[in-house]
Image (tube, rainbow, N blue to C red; front, side, top):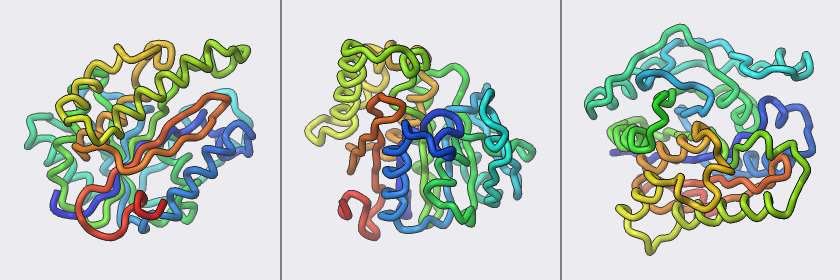
Length: 278
C-alpha cells in the first residue's frame, strides 16, 4: 500500500441500540466517538460489515446508496434513522480490481445500500455523513484464510487518507447477551478477549504465528461460546490481512454486559497515529 491508511476493527453493538440511548452501549458510544476524535478525518471509508455475506467478495458501487434497516423488533424511530453519506464508485472499482488481481474474483453491486454495520457506527463517529463510503461483503463460506487473503489483496489499494473499518463484534453470542449474568459466562468472555488481544497485539509474536492463530481461531479458549457463528469476527481477519502486523492500539468497552475489543493499525508512515495520541 503506497499511501497511509488507518485500519480499525470495531465492535458495533446490537442493531440500532447504540443510537437509541441504550445504557448498555454507553461505553461503546464513548469509545467510538473518542477514536474518531483522535483520527485524521478520512477522505473515504471502506467498511467490511458482518451483516453482508455473498458468494464472492461484493462491493457497493452506487453513487448514493440507500440504507438497509436490517434489524427487527425495534421502535419505529429505528427505521427512520438517516445517514445520507455518498458512495465512492472510484474506490469501489479499485477494491474490485485489487481483489481480482489477487485471484479473488469480485463483483460490483450498483444497487445495494448500506446496512447497519456501516451506518450505526459511522453515525456515531462521523455524524455529518459527509465522507464517501464503500461497503465490502464477507464471503459466505466464512473461511478464515479467505478473509485474511481479502485483507492482503487490499494492500494494493492506492487511495490517500483511507479509513478501513472492519465492523463486527469480538463477542457475539446473542443468547448470552440476554441470559442471566453468570460468573462462568464472564470468565469465558474474558478468556477469549485476552487471547484475542494477545493474538492481535503481541509484538513479539511472528506474523506467521499470528496468522496461524487467526486461521485456527476456533481453538482459542471458549471460542465457540463467544462466536457460535463467526461472521462477526471475520472483519477482524480482513483488517489484520491488510495491516500484516501487530495492532498499534487496543480499546475495550463493555457492551450489553460483555467485554468487547476494538483494534487499530496504522499502515504507512504518515501523520501521527491513534496509537501515538493515546
